[in-house]
Length: 456
Image (cartoon, rainbow, N blue to C red; front, side, top):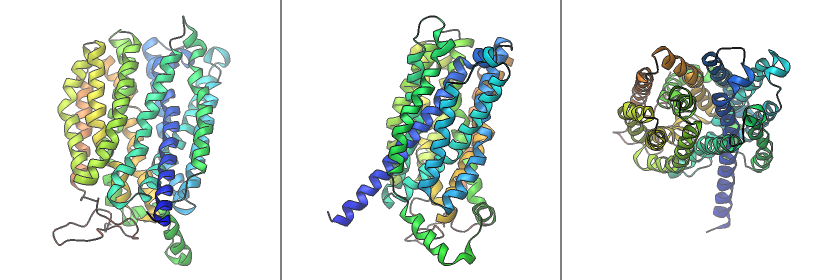
């Protein structure tokens, strides 16, 4: 191995660790909020409402953050495509960590009245803004630093940040909820938020040591030399890459809302509608997250071998076919059945559709609009589906007298939309990311030009 090769390998490894660890910390912070909203925020911040209404309000406060995600995606995309991936990721990380720490010391409704839920919503918007720019940046910097035949694998590692954060966040809340009596509801829920400060310090140190993407540096140099070609990333996306953007947006329907349905809503469903110990839901999510962490890199690597589309369509089909059996398992109220249902979704459905997305999204867009295209394409559907899925699901179950049939229909319909979107895309695993306009590096006559290569 030459010195140059060794240096390249070290840079790739450092960048991959930075993106993955940063994503884990940010999604830990995000998960802590989601779990606390499902378990205690109704009583802490919305006590004046009826029990069912306070629960819906608490879950809706979780959804508020998703409203800021597209804004964060736009701003971070603009900064990431003009100033750099690394500096933008440091900014989003700082905002997320500060907002999470402040939630940990936020007074309750009993202490400051209506200002408590107002300030909670403001801090939640800050979290959403930060996450809106985080995922795209972590995905782009990982994929742009990857070897061509390992982009699916490299891109899947920041993806485990979501489930790793879910695992750590759920574990932290689960440990805090073990406090005796009503101590968890009174003050114990704050501990996981405050612990985020320690994680943030570690994550920031790692993120600051990362390297900028070589593809971005090369493209930026060319752009600086020819400023006449410079356009706002969003303008360029809408003008020249509309089809790619629409495919990226609708491909998320397979997991955007369904993920939160099976990891956030299920926590309140098992403890309220099914009236079983809340630890059942926490245990199911913990086990499912652990399996998901292992499965995501596996499916990412499979997408390098078989293609992004085939792996994605396998996962989407699995979600559609197993929607009813999974909810039937959860409805039994048995710990083993709830856990099995969540594990099946996260290990074989969610992991398969989620793992290929970073590489697939990056391969859809050229370098100087890639951060914007990936971030906006990923986050738009977050506000439409993901943000309010837990609260909508709670309302549907309440309105249907406890039935999960509306939820099954919601899962199937949303996933079918994603399948249709992916069928309109060409396979992208062979595109050359170093070219200004992505296309296969060794085109064959029987190969279609990937979406993103030329569309208007």
